[in-house]
Image (cartoon, rainbow, N blue to C red; front, side):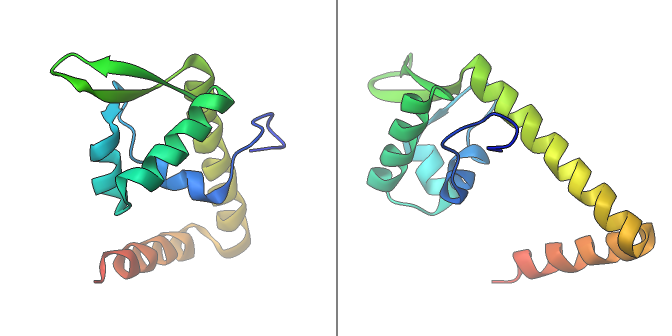
Length: 115
């Protein structure tokens, strides 16, 4: 992502990126989905706010809670991530073939769903 112009992105941010919904998500929900503490999630969110990828807005249903929403820059980051994944899949498919890639993806899904 750095090469695509998105500074400050670290591997740990994936836990945040994959758990914020398009219309925003409460920090407590992000933490639950990611299997992280609220404090650790709050730190990641604060980093993403500082980097300009997310903004915090009040939760209309609970004045004490905040909702993390992607900024325009954050939405561009998501597009870049998808493009990077597609490029990687294309490269792997070219190297091992589409059938083998499909098998690899199925195996990885299986591994990830195993407790």
